Image 1 (cartoon, rainbow, N blue to C red):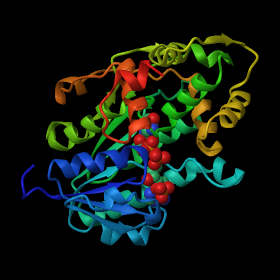
Image 2 (tube, rainbow, N blue to C red; image 1 turned 135 degrees about the vertical axis):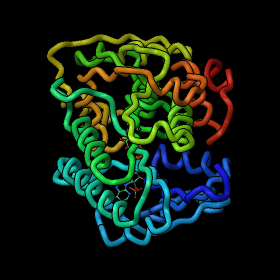
Image 3 (cartoon, protein in one colour; image 1 turned 30 degrees about the horizontal axis):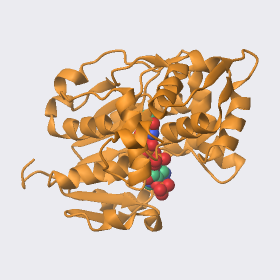
Length: 324
Ligand SMILES: NC(=O)c1ccc[n+]([C@@H]2O[C@H](COP(=O)([O-])OP(=O)(O)OC[C@H]3O[C@@H](n4cnc5c(N)ncnc54)[C@H](OP(=O)(O)O)[C@@H]3O)[C@@H](O)[C@H]2O)c1
């Protein structure tokens, strides 16, 4: 990108993906404006990144989006509404997601935004899809309905330190020598390393041919959740026994995952419901459009463990992975 390139709006900077992407954008010299609804959650290190500014805004408050989008050429949409402080909030995430996306498209059209880059979820409609995955598809459709050309990247579980899938995996395998799981343990998925996801997000901004496309992104390994847990155990040198019991319901397993891990119930519940759905790339056009080195799950887990121990950006170390 050159100095004449339009500035980029980033939503979700206090989150797992946005907090990483902003560093990559700044390192590339791209000017970024971050829309933040809870500035107290912003890590100090992000606030001093060169070329990065922060504005207050909330996707559920349409009037806060107009000035945030002014002068922007492209915007990353890296937001979901799962979570919540009470049962009513936990169960109404899809409605908030719909409202937020509609507000955003309206404001983007008014501001003359050219491109939207959205990271959503894999999974096919009509496949008894979980409410969370249906909501991700609905958001994609809304974002594609405006005048800006939307690039939709669809991913399964993203593996990286601090992300919900890795933290659930880490706490379960570390804490439970014997795991009793429902049938979902043998569902297939195609997890991807968070470093590969941020590379794709940046690559799509740079590659105009990705504008307006829906592209599946996945890692090298198509595996079951059982195999994912076994890879984690192998990387950590742990012996683990995983038993599947057909009568255990996803709801029940969500309760014990919530007990065993620090991931909030409002996130665990919808994610665990989605474990029944196969999340595998239907096509791999992204590999030609944005060629990058894909990271194996073993390396992704090793990097995430190293970062958990030594902080963001630490290189994978055999000490962090094999020798504890
Ligand atoms: N993590 C994964 O494994 C995974 C897999 C596939 C796809 N994705 C997609 O990647 C995107 C980012 O996910 P993530 O894992 O980074 O999520 P995350 O860590 O939970 O972060 C969510 C972000 O959304 C922001 N947000 C929520 N509601 C908002 C609102 N009304 N206005 C403004 N900001 C709002 C949050 O801000 P606050 O800090 O203020 O709450 C936070 O910055 C989502 O679209 C998700 O579907 C993630």
